[in-house]
Length: 277
Image 1 (cartoon, rainbow, N blue to C red):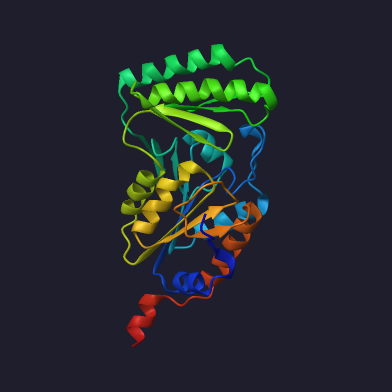
Image 2 (cartoon, helix red, strand yellow):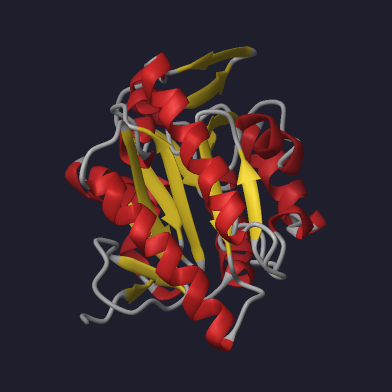
C-alpha cells in the first residue's frame, strides 16, 4: 500500500486552500468527525469540533457538507449546524438550504430491502453485540461488539446476504468497518452525492475537499480526485485507497479544521485583490 501524504504537514495543501476562491468541505461523520463507538447511537461530535464547523459554515467562501451513511434525520441531529448541507444514506437523502429531498426508489426495491432486513433480524438479530440500524431506504448491521466464534457466525451470514445482493435482487450492499450496509439499488453513493451538491454551489474556482475513513468513502475520494481536489483518509486501513492525503484520527481532523479556519481567516478577498490591480 502506497504511503499517503500527511495533510497537516503538506505546504502545498495550505497554498491551495489559501488561493482557492471557495472551499467545498465534504465530511463523513463516524470515524472522521466523531470517534467510532461500539454502538452507533453513542457517537458524539466533540464540542470543539462543533464550534469550528459552525464558524466555518458561516464563512461565505466555505461550504460545509456532511456526507454520511447515517439516515438524514439522525445525521442532522448529530451535527447541529443549520448552515451546513447534508446527504444521508449514502447519497439517497439530501437537506440543502432548508429543503429536504430523497432519491426516488422503486417499490419493488424497498419491499426487497425490508424482506432482507426481516430475514437477517430473524437469523442474527438476537445475538448479543449485533445492532441493526434502519435508515429509510437503507439499513446497516453493526457487529463491532461481537468476537470469536460468534463474530464468525455473524460475518458468515452477512457475507451470504451480500453474495445474494450481488447476484441481483434489487438491492446493493457493502462492507465497512465491522458493519454491513444494504440499500435500495438506485444510482446513489457518496461520490454521486458530492457531485450533486457541488453542482448546487454555483461558485467558480472551487477547491473540493473530502475527508472520510471507510470503504464507502472511496467513491467520494475518486470524485474529488477527478475534480483536482484534496481527498483525505482518516486512520489506517488494510488495502489501497484512492485518497491522496491522510490524517491519523478524528483529533487530527479537528486540528485541520482549526488550521482551515485560520488560513481562510487571514486570506484577502480575491475579488478585491483583482479590482485593486
